[in-house]
Image (cartoon, rainbow, N blue to C red; front, side, top):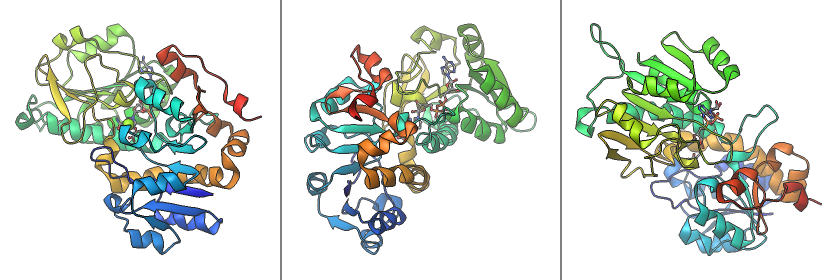
Length: 371
Ligand SMILES: NC(=O)C1=CN([C@@H]2O[C@H](COP(=O)(O)OP(=O)(O)OC[C@H]3O[C@@H](n4cnc5c(N)ncnc54)[C@H](O)[C@@H]3O)[C@@H](O)[C@H]2O)C=CC1
Ligand SMILES: CC(=O)C(=O)O
Ligand SMILES: [Mg+2]
């Protein structure tokens, strides 16, 4: 099969979807890898490292998209890329369709098969292709939050860990999944006083076993969210209903309860965000202020640390990519229930209930396309 690796063009996105080790395994299995020149440079991989293991380097994105049966990316194709998508082509990447109707309609119109990293789901309910980036973003949310709490950046001027004689900052984490546990570990390690709110008692029990004593576990309901919000210096949003638009846990009027100069890092922004006043921002211009509260809504946070993120992402995605290449999408999805849950759009139809619900559309079960 011909596998295309375009250079990511979303602003400040320096990850790449396949590393040289992956190309080596794909070419050994008899596949051709078409890589856009410079695709790996932002993650520290030169073209020569790819050609050494059998990749063909193509001069531009048009030739990669035109030549490949299977396109593997990191981020959703953005508008300038839409005209390149061909009917029948398979796309394997993050899409986050439920947050963006225009994106969804463009992919429906393309006739392509869209398998979304973020909804591949194991029987344990783990999201194996989202997990590594949620680990990165959860950890990074604390760095970013600490930075914007500095006075220079408009924050309250509070140091997360405090110092002897001065109490530490209060960090409230909404959702105790992968983002939540990673954020909590980092914030707690810096000495902050952390609260995680989640609706899953099973998850709260697990978190109480593995997290240190400066992390409090609280059941998430509106009453409790507002109580902890009022004391927070930093709020980190990490709730998720897989594939669906994120529930809004903070409303605009709630910001008035918060301390001026407090910071919200809404990691859940890629599914629309869990804060009513959040909108997507970029690494170049990551924050804005509403009612005195700093909002951070970067939708590709791991793109800011591309070396770590590319290695972490491709460790997880590669086995699935190899299966798609070896078997073709239909056979690979027939044999793997987890990967089948990744099918969001096929040949003009929505195949994921969460995406369909976001826009009041109908959806067909993936099985309909695998006969
Ligand atoms: N902005 C970025 O660059 C990135 C964003 N993300 C996003 O971060 C979000 C979280 O991802 P993960 O932690 O991997 O998800 P996860 O599935 O591991 O955790 C989500 C948690 O939210 C909890 N939850 C659901 N509804 C809730 C509610 N109403 N109140 C409180 N808790 C609730 C669930 O019980 C679960 O524990 C996703 O939208 C993901 O796409 C992930 C990586 C990078
Ligand atoms: C998960 C995601 O959207 C990202 O890593 O950019
Ligand atoms: Mg994202």
